[in-house]
Length: 250
Image (cartoon, rainbow, N blue to C red; front, side, top):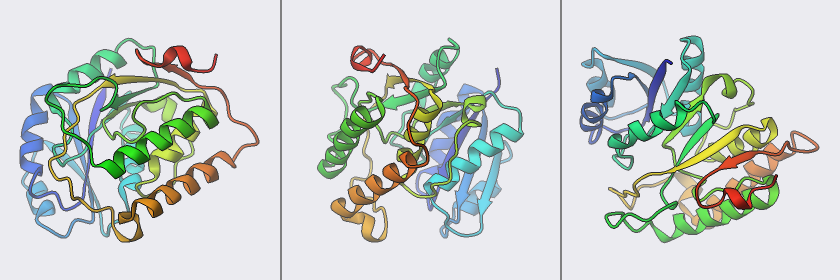
């Protein structure tokens, strides 16, 4: 089983060296998608001889970075892609948890959840992000039959063969909304595992109007509805998570 670790980055010179050092012990091939960084991120990556870099000449968005990472993995013959952010909000020591889950062969997408179980050392989330997450969780359950506790965590493992069945073209931060709608359409098997809730920088910006929580939620809803309208109906989705699988649609 070949597994790629993909890390999208945009102006992450502050965190990049530490993150790369922390993920190396797990022996995975590492891909960094440099999404048009204007700081020293590109220079730092140029020194890394054991890291593959895809570079966008301009900032194309978080979603596009993930789409490009999945495409790279498909072309490279990988079986799985684990994605994680580069702002130290994802704990590299939990990579083995994902490897254990995907090795069972039972799932197509293993998604981290910062809310599945509470760890005493977890950080409190920014209130607007938590509120939007809860709203989207409820809508995914009602509209798609996907029962999730965390719809926005970027710490995930994707089965490459399953990702080929999805039509993904949302370039921005609303990418997860399209992803979940496509997973429902394709009937993919989703599994949540608990991950740490870490907020190193509570004031990070989304950019433009998305910094306004109301506008951000409205944008997410528009992307979700647009993804759903691609089909007259959506396939049911099988969900496996310790807390909420019993409430998923049959």
